[in-house]
Image (cartoon, rainbow, N blue to C red; front, side):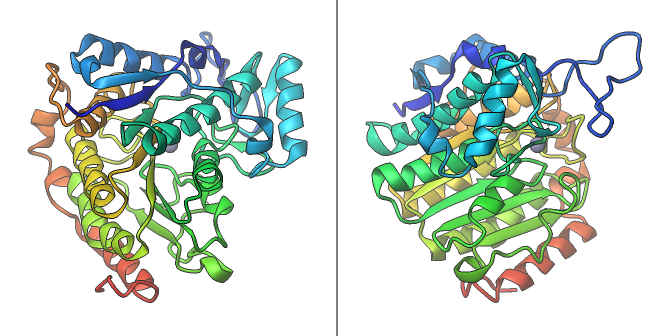
Length: 376
Ligand SMILES: [Zn+2]
């Protein structure tokens, strides 16, 4: 039986993102009824409840997260920013940057989210399991060193990668970010670092618009170690799997990571209100299995998955269940009831559109300069 670590704490639900305010003006939306913030606690809560309703629990080993020590957070974030988040939280809340809501206790919970990602790394590297999933919130991949962005306060996956290298002496870490948005903070953290391979598939120019373009390839010694694969809206399972098989897997095999981290945003799903992609739960399962194949070949199976976005209250939990089913190599008793039967007939799911093919080919051409395994 394959046991997988599941890092979770009910405290994650206490990070309060309401009310939803417009990102630029800071005003609430002008409706009589308040609109819930997209990154409200229900998404993670529904996910943990769905897992609980399924019979997958027998394959999951629950792991309690710990609070990331401030010096570890400071490996990426500036001290001034850390202090500002703490003060904001103490004062009752506010915005940690651009659309990164902080409420009472959010500082402590954000430390627990970063520590949750660290605990997933500990499980993958230190224990008798090699795979772990950190079901954390707030998410992290947009957070920059000196400001929060896009619902993210501290960059959980960055902290996890730094923890893996510092505590376990790893040299090379690969991060695959499949969130529909670009992991701009993660890219920034390792932009000149030759030992962290950052790969992102995302909807082209969705958020943040100035990040994730094909010509952002890293700098200095890190040149060619940032791999951006911007995809057109509407891309589905076939396009994502082509990106994985034709681009990401060959590069990873040449890079030879000692640990693979996934920034897992289930907002590229076919039902997401914040994205316009068409990935199904089955697609997430296949992408997870591909990363397990790589981890098996390259780094003793060591794989840690860190939750990022995912805003379809109905569908995202099923995508996460499919990811956990892949990790545990177990099919639970729950069938995905929403999209799969329809998606099997969707051309976006089954075939690569012409614009998607062009995007994939452009990425291959760009990165073939740095990776001989890649044939444009
Ligand atoms: Zn996202």
